[in-house]
Amino acid sequence: MSQAIAKGIDPIIAEPGAPPIAAAGTSLVIREWSMSGPEYMHVHQSDDEAWHVLEGTLRFRFADREVDAAPGTTVFVPAGLAHTYRAIEPSRYLIILTPKIDRLIARLLNWSEVSDLRSTLGEFDTVLAEQAALQPGETLDQRSGA
Image (cartoon, helix red, strand yellow):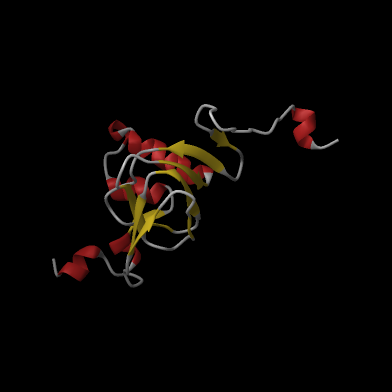
């Protein structure tokens, strides 16, 4: 008998017309969302992330381009790639992420728990895009000449 059956774990099935899906396992989280991502470009250094657009359009920004994702489009961002996105019209989409990124988003959505953005991101192995481009040992102050 599998562990899932022994523990009474059931699959989560989201059919048309059902409430928005929210499923969290040990290695994967899926949520149905409608809001935009953060305004700043960021890099999850060890976690992949993906979106599947159900309605509306999401505009993804990468270091070298922007891409509009219409309904039916899936965007996969591998770990290490700078990105952000925003809903450019009322949208509904599935976001597929790791439990670590899910916890980061929950923290960022509760600003009272965020005293410093860089250190909060760092707790979840995420950096601002400009930090990701630093040479080993280089600081943002060194780059700006401060």
